[in-house]
Length: 517
Image (cartoon, rainbow, N blue to C red; front, side, top):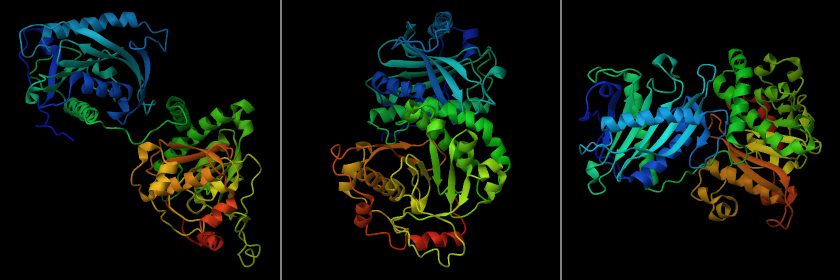
């Protein structure tokens, strides 16, 4: 990776005119010694940041693209883009007069809008901040230079500016390349203030910090494009991001504050509550997408949360009108905060799949209740960090989604699955064909098991606050001719060396403290 020749630094420019414009546009910070190309690298990186503003701020969830001149389509026909285009041209004329694009000569360059994108920025917490529309203009003004101009819509003062946006009326990122001397290449950031202010007046610290962050991100991503960086983790493969996030925000507004305020476990309530809200949102969108041809998903789905833990996921799904229940080897304190309707759907049972259930094991079991893993046809199984049961879930013959966490064999013993080239080539997408971690090897093993017993396997990297976020999904069955032989569950058990000891290990869990996840 090519590094910078120096750190970002404040700068000033020799403006060809004086007066109000000098006090309206403030140069803030620049990076010298840039080595990337304006069009091939900088513009590509900046377009990606326009489409994904959450890269720059954790307070932003996403951007909805309302208009893109490269496509010509409009998402919202009620928006009068032409009216705002007048304002955009006026500000471009300001930059021409100011000489921002003529730092090495007295010539005033003509500015042309090369591409116009209008986006609506959606904040994560819409109870505190409203969405904001913004023009993002790719400007052309001669060879060797490129600029991105951000102009918020309807923001007339610092007080009306959302928290996630700098309290300014415009932001300009300007890249100048000599194409011959890299040390002279500069990436600069300017703010357009709401009202004229002498350059001798210092900007607020937050504005300066934000400028440094924006410039550093633009620089880093431009270098990444130049060096051929490819994103390793792909999100939103199975379910559309916008649908998922909208459902998540809706669930969060209805349940998050109440659940966090009444949390009775010793674990972090925010992690568990927000994680389960996100998983519930994903499941609801998945079910709507896969079961709508059968009518309403709520009428078509019956679920079982295997190893339901604190029961929050079951609570959310039941309250949203779905039918199902959760099972766990230990009752949790959290169950008692739920209404009776939900408590009736939380069962303290030991699930031992019928493949390895000892008919005599209930003798002396101290009154434990057992489930043999036989579920009605079509029951959707959920395995969220279900640990010992994770490798079993694809073998139980029902549609499922499993999110692996701790690695166990079919015997219930802790086990690290080997990372083999053959395994990766057979079941892993090309973008993760590399040496896998212990968690990666577990995920690949579950994917292979599900595929071998006849599932069409899908996978999604969930947007949840956990590094264990790989979801493995099996809804459709494949034929034996599609991708090789279909194994029976008994075949898989024999291939894995059996499941001896599983019953004893899961029974022993009933006398241990629950795991924190």
